[in-house]
Image 1 (tube, helix red, strand yellow):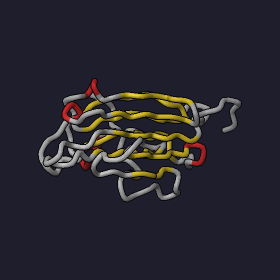
Image 2 (cartoon, helix red, strand yellow):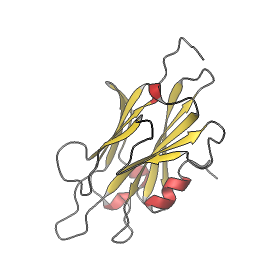
Image 3 (spheres, helix red, strand yellow):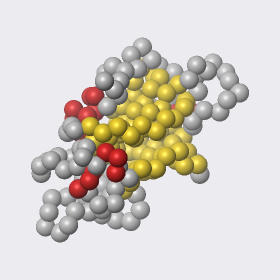
Image 4 (cartoon, helix red, strand yellow):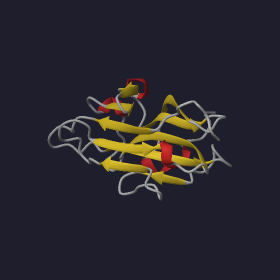
Length: 176
């Protein structure tokens, strides 16, 4: 479809958090993107992008992955190129999950968490997870195609009490 509207093109999702106190298990947060096919936009993801992976066509890439939150600036960065994503896909959900290797940990237990979503120099959304402080995972954004085929963005902060694996399979379902 051809349209004079400019949809979402190339987006970056950045995630930051403070390292855990000395002598305690590391805080490890992960950005996860789930891509859904046009035929089943709320079902099982066609594919996931997270640590150690990228989309099959290279349109969604995790550029930076931290296991500790140490360092300056963003700890994790994911790039999503919607202007190149095949028309077979109609919805992408982006979320953040906390690794639960060393016992249950929530967003409220991790200092200075923050997610930022930008397209070029335009900020689409920013959040500190305070609204989902008791959760172990949260969706942060929904990108979907409109009737003209252009990608649109919707901020979607929704908390989950799930480990990264179960979160990845349920993050795109319709809220009950």
